[in-house]
Length: 137
Image 1 (cartoon, one colour):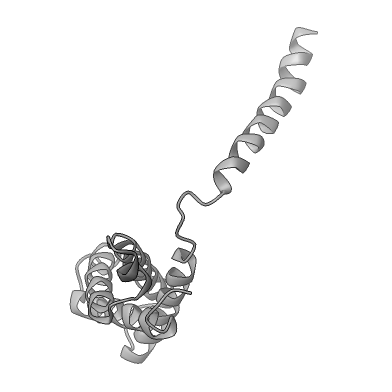
Image 2 (cartoon, rainbow, N blue to C red):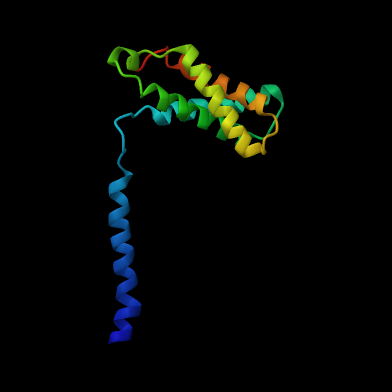
């Protein structure tokens, strides 16, 4: 009975407990629900920018753009005044996107074409600002 219990029941209990535990963290951890939107816009802009420049592959360009989009969202959420959190700053979005794109490009490309990665990130930051009309809904 002991071997049957160990082999049949314990794995099922562990699987059920892991499923129950993993469902709770699936809820958003922060109050910022726009991170997926900004990340998706950044990934799309990274793909388009990389295709226009004719550099890199689609997945790397999407990863650089997504990193830029997430960074733009993260920096935007750190603004202190509610008015400044509601309206975006295009200069800040482009600068943060360029920095994050360069950092992601340095990691993904091994330090090659860092300026091009910064251009891809800046394009992602500009696209986020333009497509969201410079403000949050």
